[in-house]
Image 1 (cartoon, rainbow, N blue to C red):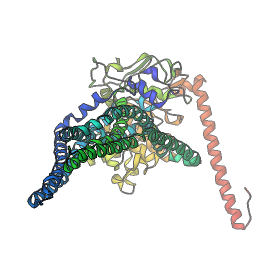
Image 2: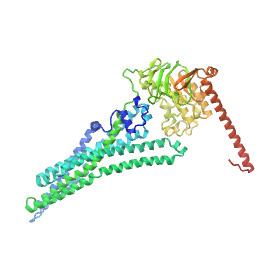
Image 3: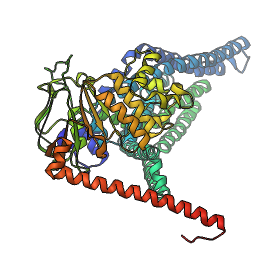
Image 4: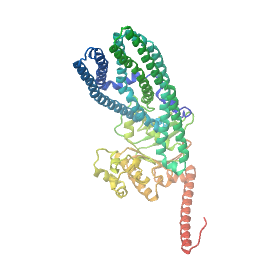
Length: 630
């Protein structure tokens, strides 16, 4: 799968096809049948009800023909016969109403089970996919697969088969009865069937392509909507609302154009079947009228024949809706199966064995890695960290510091070399077992909706509230968390949006402490917080690092001076490594970084002082009534 990294020139669908190793247009019938196997009893009940309803429908023309030919004779009127016929007609309508309710109930129950099982299957599969898949796939496309596309399968899987069976039964029974009553009428209608078959095949082929394009364009504007919601602050801050709206409108126009074009290409089928129906009825009246004139057909038989002709031709019109739903559902099913056929980039080998006790020794041995083919980020890097050591990693942005975290946690596999944990290649360790012993605290950690306690309990599900609070007290986060509006019961909001950056970071540090990993990785953990919060975080970090191996990646150099060793990485290689004092004395890359950092900090401090003085000056001027031009 590494060969797929960076295929940005490909369309989204082409990328999905490469991920899944199959083409979008492949048949999905054999894949759909197993989905309904668990509810085959319910489907059978719906089909049985449809058969009874079809029989009830065909009872009506028999009763009407009987009344016309025998109940309404010229010499006398058979009132009992007419009364019983009316009771029979009422019974057929009653059966249809009652059974129709049961049919909807069973079909709805089957739909809920099938769609929920499929949603669960898609959700579970998405969680197994590697991080690289999410780096290259828009979130909206994944949501469209698990939500809208799954919903679209309901008419295809649940409602479609019984309705299609009902149409076929009505077509066959009406043909048989019409043959028994008036063979010449059926012979006249036989010319319609070949035309219908050819038109149906053409319609199926055209509409499936059209609705595939509609489904793809729907996924695009859904993906853009999801991205807009996620990046709403950036859009507002940069004033790009109008540009973003224009892009969304463009995607909607593409969707509407494909929808209109698809409707135009497939819209001919319904009028065409209507034309066939009209022609069939006209042909029936002509042949039937001649039969009455010649005395070979009674008025009751003609009336029955008209019903049968209608029941024969009506399914032809229903096929338009049925095949449109089939085409739409098939297009969505193909996309769902593309997702389900996508295999994770990272997978446990058959010889992978879990680890139960970790000392924490880490080694990057001649490691090379690149997100894009031919563009390595890490180049033949060697770095050895002994158990219990705190190592800080510094260097320019984009030179591979955070990539080391991705490789250590095996979100990506190295292209060359190996990453070892306690002397063992991490590729021989199951992912879950590996990550259980490696805790990672990022710059922008994610919290789930719920309370602070709910988020802390993610690290230790069986912990009591008192144990969670005690952990917060241990690393110095209790005072901040208790100061929240409802303390530990405060709702953190979506993705922790109701908390500040520092508050979220403290929650994540408590969570890391509760998880008690053997190896702790802190990737810019003190970035984007104020000085007071940073001091609390620093205190928490010191406690977290006690007795375990720690890797600290930071751009604020004051946060890593107490590390046992500091490694400077440039262009994906370790160019310097040593203690803070030794590296300063060497007057190398680290010393230069330190000087730049101090100059930047001094400039920031002077800017703050000047801002404060300007504020006081503006206040003095305002008090004296002078005006200021800025």
